[in-house]
Image (cartoon, rainbow, N blue to C red; front, side, top):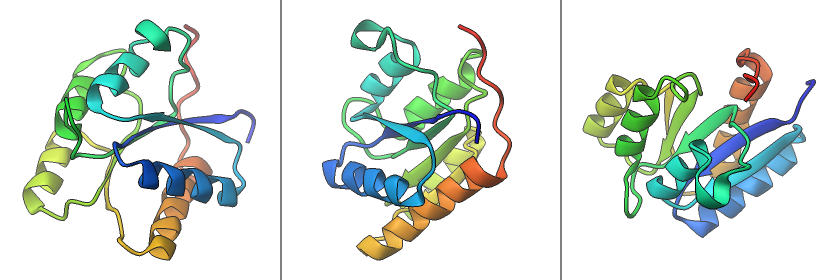
Length: 146
């Protein structure tokens, strides 16, 4: 792969962030993982506000639904409504198996919905599958010059 894949993980669970870091490192793909701990931080990152003025544009967003301050569905709606952000593939990665959350995520134009497994090995396998598909299989758009 020619360039570093920029991944924005939006998750308020430090353990899930650590597992994601380990799984991506094990996948041996040139990536840089950025973490936002809630929806407010995510939108500041995406809009390059405040401490995030030099933040890169992510190639992929992995979005948890259940977060403080601003939840994942609200973030998803904002991202997909913003002409500058809507082209970024956004995969919901959450513990919710609720059909309503699945349906609403796709209504809001999520590019995928993945339920986080409880078992650590399964979680790492799921992350590897996401990474393999979005980094190895799918052609992502070239970065727009900012």
